[in-house]
Length: 312
Image (cartoon, rainbow, N blue to C red; front, side, top):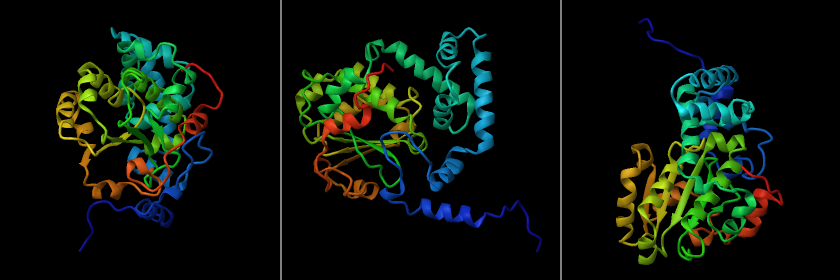
């Protein structure tokens, strides 16, 4: 019988990389902090399969995005004009963050760039005098924590423990400002651009005071940050140990969330079997049900920024 359809021989090396992608551990990935000196071969394969990234697609996509940015300034769209003003002379490495975040779909990458400048236009209070030093004290207080090790999928893990959070001492906006600086800094790393981020939020100490002290407008601001405002791949949000009244707060947030983000939120409560399928207990600190010591927040701030004080 004659064969029908198309058939492509997969090189042995590519098959080996595909197999490795299914059996990765936390040791197979590069550092979280600092630049990516060399992408692991399995991450290059992942970028090819998930993002449609090749040497050729990088060159052609960058060329098309630069042309699109210039072309769109002729339309009656103020955001497109701001995109060109902000990114027209930026190096390829910056534009590639947006292209990767939208799987090499250039039109969607340009829309993400518009979302990036829209977020800054809509919430100027988050970006006024925004420097690493401006948020250092918030990060040193643990809001949020960046795990020094990637998870087994190569994602950067951001932790937020609500138990000791005093909204008067560290405001909601101050935590969002810290997230914004952290995201910008870590997105300089190509491995992070490809593998993305995952958020874990421990709600064990979530009080009625927390629930009543967080405004719906602030919750919307947080959701906007996670949706179409950063060239970041937010792969999942895990919530643990939430009390019964967490549902009220979550129901306020849900209408602001697109289906894609909703599908990536996992609310575990105290049943953590699914949680530990995703995360190795050895990399999680004890306050997130792991085996590692509680992170030294000042060390994390130093790894992120050193003594540098550069406005974003």
